[in-house]
Amino acid sequence: EVQLVESGGGLVQAGGSLRLSCAASGFSVDDYAIGWFHQAPGKEREGVSCISPSDHRIFYSDSVKGRFTISSDNAKNTVDLQMNSLKVEDTGVYYCAADCWGTTDYWGQGTQVTVSS
Image (cartoon, rainbow, N blue to C red; front, side, top):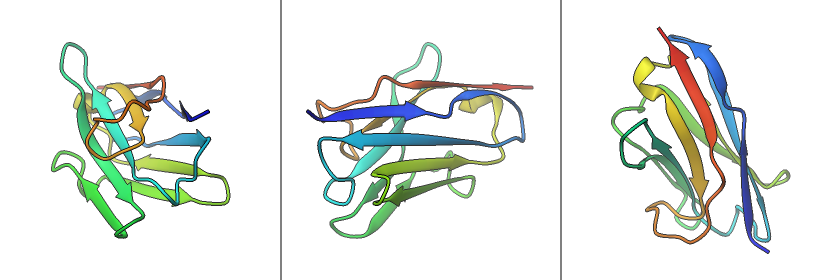
């Protein structure tokens, strides 16, 4: 069974850091792209970063470029999102999914990130 489980969310002050982790089971993160998506309160979910092992490419949205870093750990079968210099507008629920475009059926349950001013 394919499953994705996020962890690492929490409350942090603006300028702080958090590290989110997406643990995959039922497939290898070395075989499929994993994307991180952000849904701010009252807004649609949008992609923030993705790692694609098939072509060794990494993507970041303009809003997080230079602040967030995505990485994969094949031994742990996880994809992490290191979030630095957090801003209030980074607040929301973060989801990982088994693709870069958000069209997959396989999503995690989400983890809440709250950045206070």
